[in-house]
Length: 127
Image 1 (cartoon, one colour):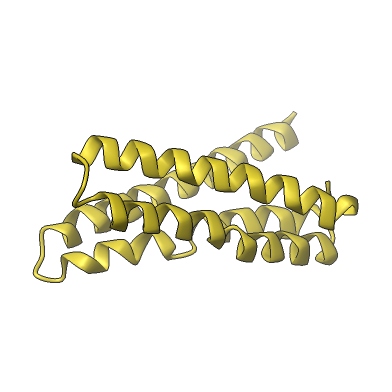
Image 2: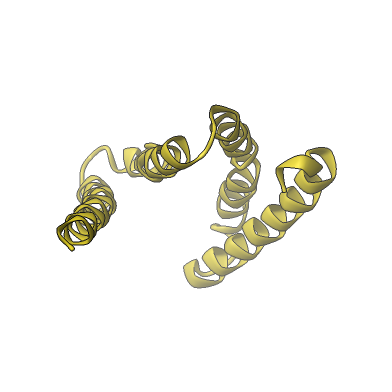
């Protein structure tokens, strides 16, 4: 019974650490957006906070090859992010902020679905 309790404690501690990393990222974005270097707030989301979590989980629960596949897919996932950023850049002088962000998010979603469709055709063994 103590083994289960220790396992739950480890899981809760791990979950708390993951939440803390996310909170620190949000705090950094908020602080930087108010500073003279406000543009650096755009770099913070690219810090691999969530990639570290994902790679840690995949690396401990799956094979090295699965970790490599996850990293490769992460590289390709930069394409939908670039689509989102280009949409924000292009739409921001043309639309109100809310519409810009909604449209950019829809563009990211479309690009992400296109990536998933292409990935499953190019790497069918990874799906």
